[in-house]
Length: 566
Image (cartoon, one colour):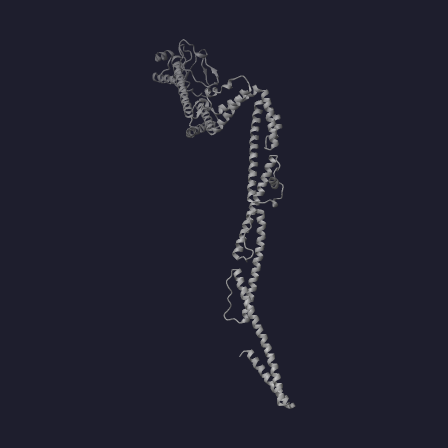
């Protein structure tokens, strides 16, 4: 049994007990029956009224709860639709009081969510307004009359994040472009002359509208300024080049050039004006010194011709080079030729440099070839001979490779340009072949000269006798008398022979004609006994004499050798 039922029974018992007590009191007093009925009816009416009042109050509470439930259900349904939430489902068979409480609590929760979403939407829209004002973009559309869903709020937040990133990107681009624009204007000595330029350069960076149009206009302005600066730099480079050429042609003193060197860098408008003034001054000096200027240009032209390997015919084709009438027209023609040759050299620079490298290698190779044919090269000390041989062998390998590489490059160039690449008036490979042929002809000529010289020497030795090859310094200790005879290797040699004078086989054999007296008046100097000189190298004729003498067992006289020669 529930407590409420126990309390109800106790209430009934209390009422019955009270009525019995009233009945006892009335009997004790002696109240008549009719008065007892009246009094009992009054008690009944009083209790009944009190209970009716209590019942009415409870019924009123029930009605209020039912009404609250209805209102909460309605409001809850509306909130669920606005917040895009599933409808509320109560627990199984709840009481009126529990249902009202659950509904009311749920309504409060949804109302709080609604307020939070509205508040966040308001904040996001304020941020969107600020970003759109800076970026000059349209506002993000979202209905203010409805409660935004969670997906809509998330999409809105991501949209604002992208706008913030775009703002940062444009801000950085604007700041960087602004710095470049200011630098360009400073170099050009230019001040902002339009409202847009003043907004960019003079106004605060935060107040500048970062619209796509403004960013594009910034890039256009920067491009224009950079083009002007590039043109200015190009003009300054041309002016400096012109100044340098004129300094060289007019032979301007070094101290005067150094005094002006401060203006030889940079490309500001002020620098350009200084350069222009210097060019005008030098041009005036050039007109006053026309003859010297033309001579200087001709020297420069000859240098360019040499670099481009121009032949004599190609050089003669420029007739003004030989004109002595120094006029403005002549100077102009020389300037045009100089520019044409410079352009020609730049176009073919790689090929000319390759040909120049080949010529330098060829020149070095010819030097090594000349040294290789020099008999005195063996007297070189310090390892230079070995180094030269290594370099010579290296050049013998690299020269053909370089020639083949140039051949391929020149062939490709000729196919591209539809013309022949000329070096000194002839095709390069013909020029190379000619150089190799000239080298072979020179070697053959030297070889023939050596053979002819050797043949002449043999003929002279056969006719006049061989010349002893003695050391350059000989120490004479004692001169022998004509009557003395010395013996060497078992062969008797007479120093007083009237027909011939013969040295030992160690010193070579020297035969004199009968008509020529022996050298030193017939006296032979004696050598140091304890030191024997190295015998000189014998020639072919001397070896023949020695062989014949060994066969005969005696020393040949001049007459015997003469008959042998015949």
